[in-house]
Image (cartoon, rainbow, N blue to C red; front, side, top):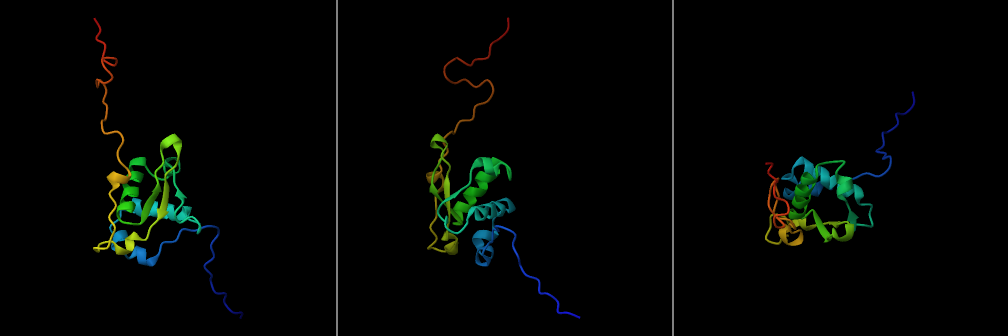
Length: 146
């Protein structure tokens, strides 16, 4: 009989790993499954030389999750120090640029750098318009039939 071959961990293409220290940290443990999955998506976009230059667009995310879920999950990753916003996008369809952060290592301590989401990603529209809502003068008033 011949020797048994040892099984190797062979990867077919790119993979997205998560550090054990991060997985065991309080910053990661309290995340929802959607937020953890979003982190894996960010790691998948990381290829070694772009730690502070990761682009993830809404169009790419729509295939994985709802946009509202993405926004809540992204904000939680930022709040917990796992990712950072490097450059805000939006103007002339420029994408937002993210970076992987190490702030999570100090999460829960006095040295943790807290980021205020409202300051870096302010809500542009605060009023939600409903059917029949009056704005822009009387231009959009409901017409009554006689």
